[in-house]
Image (cartoon, rainbow, N blue to C red):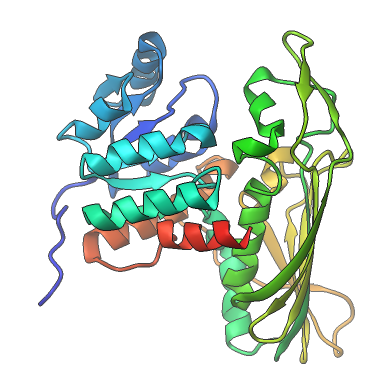
Length: 361
């Protein structure tokens, strides 16, 4: 029997939890991507305060504003609930959406722990709703080009890969109050959880599953204070992650992720094969936060024994260049979500993928 598009002749209505009108990931990435897509319509927004919820509704052009996640999820004009709040709140808000029978897109990390992620996955399966998680590094056009080249044998058999990615998150002592929780190891929002998850997902997307992994973490910048008040922060989350992994193919991978980079943050992924090498490099001049591998507009370069140095590979032009850098990969993820919801396919990362990644971490 052919799949019937449940949203035939209309856009998919989205409700965004955590739609702060002044700052935040929803305003920088999700909402621009939703507004740019012909497949989606911003139906509702929610924050914890009535005045900010109404300000978000006016600023972003949504139909409805809520202060309650349950009320937003229960509204008949919402098909997909998007959760963009702090990680410790994911379990409660995702559960509210699932109990309302709505499809859910939750930002990565899905939960503070693998157990929390498993709870959400199980609830979604029981409710029969579709789920998606924000592992958007897969959708950078250069990543897709590199993956296609590797799959076609362009560099032969992959022998090894090296991943380096840095952020400037901890480069200064005084940090904004809203980021303070990310310096606590038990909040699920530190370097290992966020950048570690994105990096390991990208490695497996490009090169295949990880068979085993050995890791070490370090905390090299333990002194931070709240910028607005000067209050000391009890820093317990690691700011370095080093790993050595073996893939099921036998290829080996080394990984170094670094918070607190004083130089310009950057990402470089080198993949060595029997016929040549590929390098994915964060684009020069990108804003510091955009150098993170899940955001970065990559360039891809190729080298063989017959070439002098690295040569750029052509990357297909994106569908639109009007989006902010931080929204570009998210936009491409939303395109896959729309395809999955309309046609019953499974192309976008979901809670099953998130649980596997949580267990690996």
